[in-house]
Amino acid sequence: MAEVANADGSSGTGSPTPTRRRKRVYTQLWFWVIIGIVGGALVGWLAPDIGKSTKWLADGFIQMIKVIVAPVIFCTVVVGIASIGNLARAGGLAVRALGYFLAATAVALTIGLLAANIFAPGAGFTGTPSAADLARAQQDIDTGSASGQEGLVGFLLDDVLPTSFFGPFVDNEILRVLVLAVLTACAVSAMTPALRERVVGSIDTFAKVIFGIIKLIMWAAPIAAFGGMAYTVAAFGASSLTNLLQLMAVFWGTCLFFVVVVLGGVSALAGFNVFKVVRLVKDELLIILGTSSSESVLPRLLTKLEAAGASKQTVGMVIPTGYSFNLDGTCIYLTLGALFIAQAGGETLPIGLQIGLALLMVLTSKGAAGVTGAGLVTLSASLQAFGGEFFTPEAIAIGIAVIIGIDRVMSEGRALTNCIGNVVATLAIARWNGELDRERLAAVLDDPTLVDTAMEAEHGSGLDAPASSDKATTDSDNRTTVGAGS
Image (cartoon, rainbow, N blue to C red; front, side, top):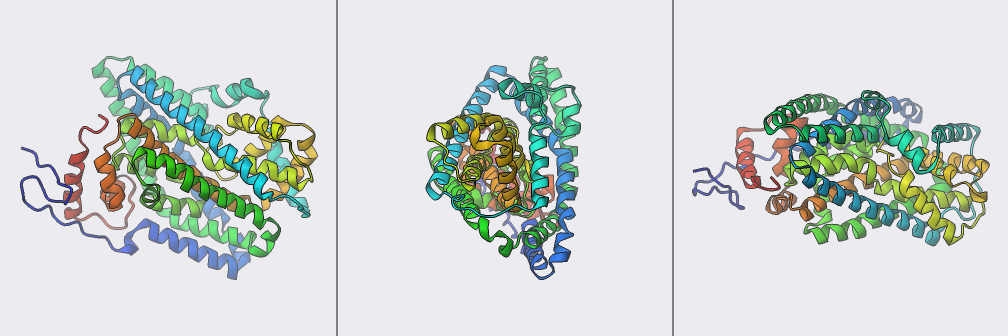
């Protein structure tokens, strides 16, 4: 008879389970990321010339992460959907997820509008962008207007529907990769059970190879955090941000309000505490803080949330699609940034036009996956699509040029909020869809170290191998998850 672990850590047979050995702090990845952030801030402050030359460390890390994001999303979506073996069940999960994403997007855009109207961060702005910032702004505008058509048709043709099978992987076009993954998953689901299991097993094996690559790349996370923070402090120190501190404060405050109130409310309805969820993913949030990109932690979130009790199917579908369709921080940034530009130009946007702008951004916000700077390009594209006397090409160029100076700081807020939003969405949807082991989640939220062994096996989250006692305890813990969402 198999043993079943009790909540107190003892086995069902009465024999004590080996005690988990708590690993030393300096063996943890998050510790070295903090060291990198603090060290980078000091270098950027004390030696700004050196700090400005370290940006490539963060850029190189993000570039390497982007290489494996598309394959990870493809594999996890295919395995997540095809392993269900029932397209109707998979479709029901997808409908619930997309419904949640649409509601969260509308709420985030509305909160951004309210914050901009209440605090008016752009009112009375007198700053003048530099020639370099104007040039960069024009580049972003050109990027945002590169598509051939506007509106829904342009969005479908230019951002959603693939032009080739391998092209989206080469260009890291997440929405198109998702379309290919869903089509592939549907085709695999239609196979006979024996053949489907072999195909899913092969794709899952390939995914493990990709995770092995990620494990190697993640060793560079502290170095990337050092380079990113050194550059941020050196290039955008407090003295150069004085005129835009109010916008940053309003944006970060709005994101905090969204996490605590909105995501806190969703978490409470789903039966868990949002603050404990934030503690669970603190390692990933620190990596995002250092690299300013939520893409850098996507593979880690897949492993951690599954180990926390969410079913493989739910995690494999919600997290990858959430990276394109559930960008809460980006939505807050879009409406807040748009009204800031209008206010900085001395304009007052009527409430009817504000609502129209928000409705447009429901569409344009999709596909702005968590890459540094994507929010700025999306904002430019949204304002061009909206047009009108309030957002002329000249006003957009000047407004984007003004925001460019602090976009790096705001990008971190966007990425952090996006990450927390997708974690809460995954757990909530799993709970409402009957795909969550609630007892396992409660135990993990009370003691996040319960997922350490799973994280180390897939991503090398620590600097030393887990002790045998750690493995024994985790193996025993994992027995409680059997049957959850299967």
